Length: 427
Image (tube, rainbow, N blue to C red):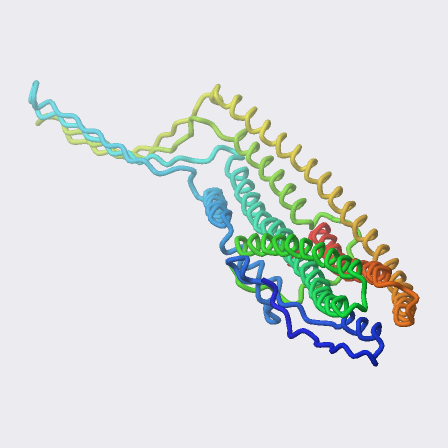
């Protein structure tokens, strides 16, 4: 149900001119009240204190990928810590004891305790440190890219909402204006001062706008539902206009390019670490050995040191190195694809902004011309030079131009936001 203000009452008096009365009824402005009964959810509230950045924070906090990013951050921190370790693996303790009690039983005893310290292969520690640093850099870039991508979603939803709400409001204004006109035309038709064709034309125009309003109302609630699902907020920022970025291209600081480049560096570091490692790790052993002989043999306690060194790399390493190099090549291909996509996105955003800017300038010129022509048409209608049908068509043409102009203003703001998104700026 459309909630209307109190209708304007016009009394039919024979001594008063008909057309000025009808014109006043037709041009009466009214503030649209957004319908709520057809939908369970109320329209989103406009909040002057809410900022797009705060909306982005709310969306990031409840985003499904938030937990994945936290887990990736923990993984990167573990990799960085591993590269800083003094030893590449845990220290091992080995114990050994021997006795002849069950056999000769002459008192022979032997015991050994050894501690094994694994050591880094030459170049391995440096490679692991590089891999850990690359993982931390990639994680920072991943966080920035996540906020940038989410900024795009938030921007799109905010401007979709703004456009859908404005379209709905403009359709309601026209519908309510035509409802008031139909009431006046009905009175004049009953009084015999207007033809029934005028009444039918007005009713037909009203029905057309009612259908338009129903469709635009549904589109608004669809956009509002998507906004609530992403942000969980019951309000939208009142001010969402952005200043056009001075950047003319993407540059290496673009979040998507930075992430792709850091992932490429991480993949190269991972391949280097695999090349330097071996399945058999060298160790240094420090051990104590005690020997207890018979009564005629003195006890012996000894402290020794030894080492274990693999003779050549593991034959499995070649496959691991090849797999790591393949992964690095895949990341390199993703970087080139990302670079192409970012450039294409910027080209499309720039083209869209230029197009909407030119359309808006042309629309402003059309509005100036249409406003002047509208005043002439109104005067002609008052003087009886235009029929009601002709006046309705010309009024509809004027309102279409006015509506297009107002929607282009919204689309221009959305095009600026899309351009800022394309050059890599987050909210």
